[in-house]
Image (cartoon, rainbow, N blue to C red; front, side, top):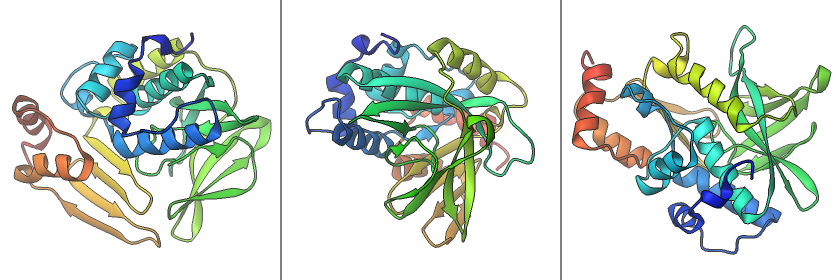
Length: 273
């Protein structure tokens, strides 16, 4: 199996998601699991902020995101999701994307997403893009748009088979990332993960990033800035004092660090706040 789905404790994963319905390889199950995963498991890069490696083997992913109820970033989240889908019986293909998100130059392929077959169609799935990401699968084809909760998404086709996932922001379409359907294997994400989690130019090693998407609100903590974005373009932003950090991580994102981890995070990244 490509994604080691046979090694997954599927029952523990479903409990983590709060999913109690049927699990079979159909679109209804795919949508339900995608929604539940995004709702239950936040996006976060705190392991890097604590000076730890980011292992991608399934045992480590289960320990972190299922047993310890932490979050993760794109490779961690989508590898866990791929294993679960494979275990249930879906056909899952890994893809790679160039994040745009306002970039003025072309970025490397460093984001992971999934192509999943269900009910005779191919679906673009991604549980690991953070606050601006999809809540549910979207048909993997150019044209049309979907509404998920209060948010709108579309896929735009470009030259050479490039597809661009976009979201509607403040009166216009905003490119999130561009990708092709070239198949990526788990070993490819190991290489991407090494760059993203260790390279001095990687944005993920500079400051804490914690995010969560919901049908009616997008929450993010980047550095010490907490933002809460709502449909229509309204954004509330405030600085989080060090003595509120633990409470904000729990209340807004469902992340509980132990006392030692919290102290280290504050020492390294919030000491001058």
